[in-house]
Length: 503
Image (cartoon, rainbow, N blue to C red; front, side, top):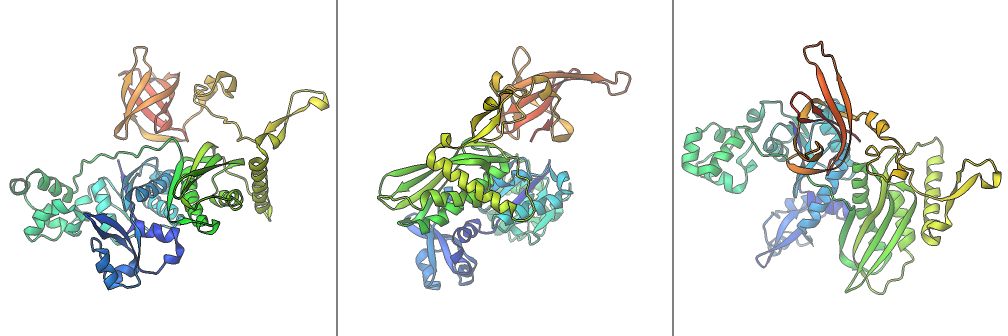
């Protein structure tokens, strides 16, 4: 397997500038409390040029730069923002793993869709740039190799060929290793990973034990760490705590834009569109207000949702200032995109969506309807009023996930559908099977995943006269955290294999 790593230098500082553009080019730090002292966790480029360094006390940092601004560092919020960016990257990679607070790994198995691994890295960086982040991308066969080269390399894109990890790691400084692992080698006077890799393994083990041996293997490009994909949350919700309670709508706008950008990035990565949202305003010192927002048409466009939120919140009168904001997607549907037209039609269409959503929110969903044709010849009965809802799904898990009366395709039709992404070679699955032969669960991407639906079989066999005859039972299954997949059971050995994935 091949893995990519994205490194964002001082990610929390980058995020702070994106949320507050007025901080661009100014000295500021993010501060956390350590043993009763406020210490610098991350600093801006201007602050670093002034001599401010991580782990420095805030008092010492302000002495170096009197105009230094400081803000609290909240590790959980940084991890949540990094996870949102990871979900945005699901449009180029099927899975990701966080390496908070400055990076994440991603599955590079879809590189052939982007013209190779360099093209995949370029596309991933482009997605990050669209959200305001600058980073470096590396693809390698080992997790440590990709992370070390992205953190300490200079090239924005680098691809390490199979078997080339040791040579690529050799010139890197010992700082690429974690502090406890590099300490014994620093004491011996070594400065690069290549020098450590050249040591005899027995001598390293005798002097430093198992921890030093593992560091020695990492320097040689031998890393057996498993990729553990992040589990996607079922409920799409984003939260943000304001630096100071907002008494008017103006300061709340910046928080709204940030939260909606993250939420829409997650929706876009999953190829979903919001239908109904709930805005929750946490008041200071107590109390909260919940405001629902119903959309006339599903969307994952941050700008449109921000316009609707402005209309919904700008005239709101609250008893107390707003201390925190959260937005939850209560209902979403498949994002089918939208066909744009020439001229000013797209802007006019967007304006219509705003008007329809405002009417639905203000008057209620029942007050806004459309005419749906009926199979009746009498003109007065040829249509019926229907609420504006997302278009019905044309695909289902062979009808298993929908009530019988709502199924639009038969089991046979769903089974004939082929996956959009096929593996180059079928991957064997470690499966848990019932007595009747149905899949209960399987091990994928480093964890046990339940099978929530299964349809089939579609039996295919043939070429009995060839050297490689086949007899397989194909199933369409829905795997927890992965979605619909195409698997088959081989009649030769009775095992299950993963063949492809559906979008």
